Image (cartoon, rainbow, N blue to C red; front, top):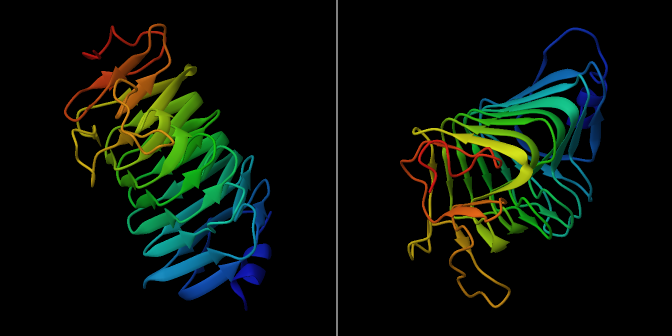
Length: 265
C-alpha cells in the first residue's frame, strides 16, 4: 500500500501511537493530521520522504501527534511557499538521524512553524531551509519548542536565521545552533518581546568571529557582514540585547528581563 494511503487510513484513528515503517525514497503530498491522530514514522534504513507539489507536507492539528524516528530525511521544495511542517495545536517530536531540509517558505518558518502546540527536538538536523520572512529553521508563534539535542544549521531568513521566537517558549538545554544567516538581525536566534527563550550551559549558539563555516551571522542584502545586530542572538528589548557568541553561557532570555538573569550581557 502506498505511504499516502497508509497514513490516510490512520488519520483520526483512536489509540496509538500507530507505527508506520518507511523505507527507500517516498513522495508525499500535503497531509492534515486531524485531532486524535497519533502516528510514528519509523525507518531502520536511510529513507527520504519528499514533498510532491507545494504546500505543507504535514499540518498537525490540535490533539494530533507525529513522531519521526530513525534515518529519515523530510525534504521540501526550493520553490515552495509554505513551511514544510506546521503545528496547529498538535505535537511533533524528531529524534536522532531525522533531517528536515531543503524547503523554502515565502512566509514565516522555512522548516517548522509552531503556530501552537509542542515541538520537541531530541536529535536530528534542521538545515538548508529558507524563509522570505522570519525563522529560516523554526518559527515559534505560540506554544513550545524544546531542543535537547540535534543541530539547526545552514538556514536563512530575514530575522532569526535559525530560530525566531515571536511568542510562546523556546527552551534549549542541549544541541547546537550554528551556521545560520539572517539579513537584518539574529543570525542564530531572534526573540521578540512576547517570546521567552531559556538556554543553559550544555547548549551552544555560535557567534560569527569570521567563521564562515560554522558561525551564525547577520549579512545584509549586499552580502555584507553587519555587526552589532546579534550574530548569535538578538532580543527585542529597548535597548536591544544582543550577543555575538553565546557558547558557554547560561542565559535566561525572557525578553522583559534580559540583562538581569544568567550573565546576559
